[in-house]
Image (cartoon, rainbow, N blue to C red; front, side, top):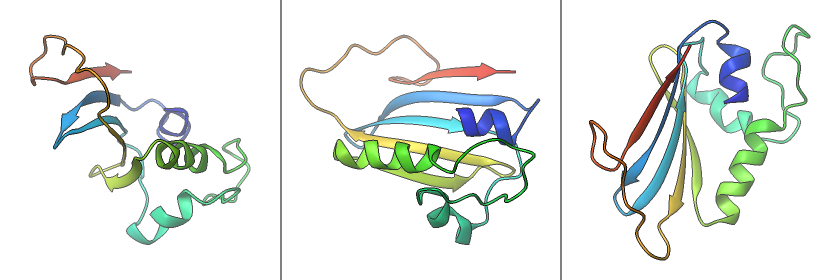
Length: 115
């Protein structure tokens, strides 16, 4: 969420959580400039800043930490095109007892729109 707020200021930020194919997914999507497909693997490397200018603060650790935590828990981070913008999807295994889903337009999903 921090990256979405920094790199797409003033744009809508979409958060969603749900279940797909036996996995839990948390998605953060923005309408900013996004990342080219070739930049997505670089974006999860520690200390990698794809925008070398000083106009956006940071150290290049955010997505690397998210990726490491997801992998530590048997999951994965996917960075996708949001046309325009970027969609970051954290996928984690479903473990233990099922958690009741809140009521929403999509069964098993919660969507929040922040401006």
